[in-house]
Amino acid sequence: MNYWLVKQEPSVYNYDKLIQEKKTVWDGVHNNLALKHIRSMKKGDKALFYHTGDEKQAVGIIEITTNPYPNPKEDDKRFVVMDVKPISRLKRPVTLGEMKTYKIFKNWELLRISRLSVMPVPKEIWDEIIRKSNS
Image 1 (cartoon, rainbow, N blue to C red):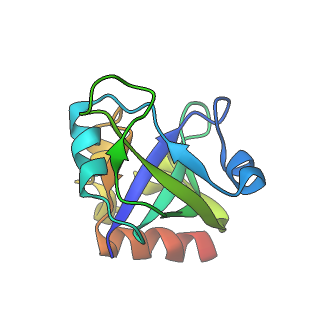
Image 2 (cartoon, rainbow, N blue to C red; image 1 turned 120 degrees about the vertical axis):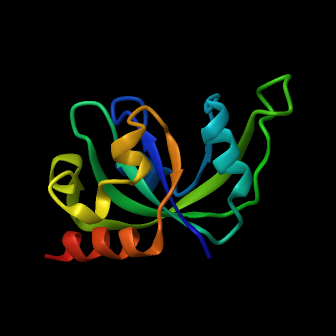
Image 3 (cartoon, rainbow, N blue to C red; image 1 turned 180 degrees about the vertical axis):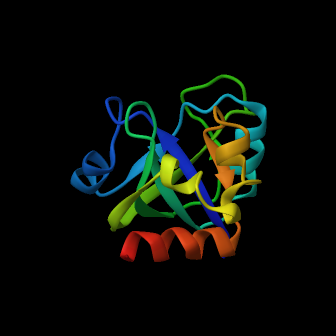
């Protein structure tokens, strides 16, 4: 299993809405690097749901429920999507500001490529975010 982080502006779509809907198609990604990451996802992988904008914090865990497939709303097959479902809300959101204070996060894409909407999460970073959420 691999771990990911997916970002969304909470005023557009947030973790509460995903819980309410029970599943969604993760679409709207057009950045080449983010699309490359989506193509690497597999059914059963887990991802952090990250609220961007004013919040800038990891708020929940989701599961990738399908392998990537071409976005049916797009004419270009390079635009791929995947289906996701909520697993659990983090006990406490972990903010970007908090992450910036710890050395373990310093080379991670979230801090280096701030506009990237989909990125891998190394296992040690995943574990640290879960640990911080539980503290």
